[in-house]
Image 1: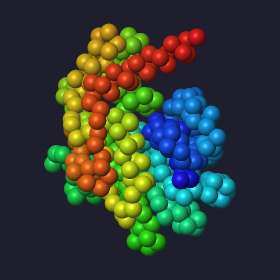
Image 2: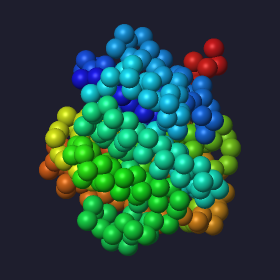
Image 3: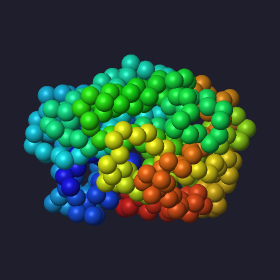
Length: 320
């Protein structure tokens, strides 16, 4: 299959691209290498993929419609995995206009280009943030999601609604995948698993909101990739599907695992709970199991071990 992956040099996107190349697909990667975090990290993410003749990199912003039109014409994709987005709850509170532009208008650009070029198959990256302060645990796709508590969550919900409208109007096959706290090798430096690993390794303080008892459904990146490729390969019409580990992990326990793997004690600075943060997230993955054969295999202990080992390897390579 010839697949266009937006955000393909990012954390999840680069792993998806690697998996597609591994199984023999052609990958057109679109990424603008913005400064949300160090662009050099993204360059390292796709270093291996760039050695594959089935991989093509387009350094472009999804907001540039004319240039994206040209890319679609050159790449001639049969399917699109749309991962490009402005991410994160807390940054969206500071830059809501940017989040709306990239996550809503950018998604509309992708959908419209797919319509114009006759591309029926789309996988869209949504987020557990659409659930807002949902009190029912675990979170189910049938739960109410019209009350997000962050601009980021609101823009991801808007993306789902746009996907629904294009499915209804043009019979596009669109799977909206709600990711739950993805972590692992190449992880985003703004998320707790990577950020805490780096700071504890360097002997610096880590900011812990509340009493450290918040719980997240940490999902290992390889398991997420399995769900993404399964959604790509199936005809589902329009579906919203949770992709999570369906097992909550307390923040204190996560920190303890990182300390164990690094052989260092964390210096903790207690902070108040931040606006937009949730006390708990947990995915009901019954639907993902039924429709995608989704079966997350990586427990948090093994996933953190892999993350820390990768981090140490990267640090050693950069020190040379």
